[in-house]
Length: 117
Length: 116
Image 1 (tube, rainbow over the protein chains, first blue to last red):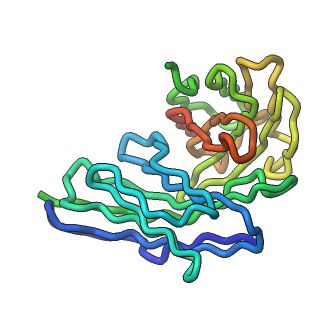
Image 2: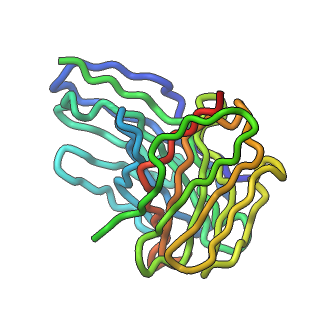
């Protein structure tokens, strides 16, 4: 079965701190995709990144970086020098490549990040 | 480029009334998804379409829920009759073909439904 675990329910940091959001996944697929989405207080779901299982290179986009490690089935998300605008709920999600249920995204329960001034 | 467009953004209705939520996917996307988000259950996939054809509706909670996609640019999610426990945010989303080239799902801004 596929599963995504975001163990941190809530995180609170002070502006300019670095913060890492954890995501651990389970899947039997050899090819799969991992995603991060952001849901700010306004409610929309914003796509941040997609990572293919065969590409373990870490990725950096501005203050955001992602660390994908197949050995530990983790896809962690780090925000460097956090800002108040980063306050949101962040979701990690998993999908497979095959037919049937693998077209569904399996979602974590989300981590609520509060960045305080 | 326009994203996924949903309407209404907010709706308050009385129990027993019919509710219709509307969605326009991103042009050219082959897949359309309807999700529901609640505090208790998180994000749930209700149904998804591929090329306007419903593929998996196993997430539709009851017969009171129905979804249609009459063409590539429009879909509806209908609840009849509505109940207070249907109060949630309903997201429509779309993506290109499900595969290596493009299975990123893009979401609309959501329809916030309150049934009183």
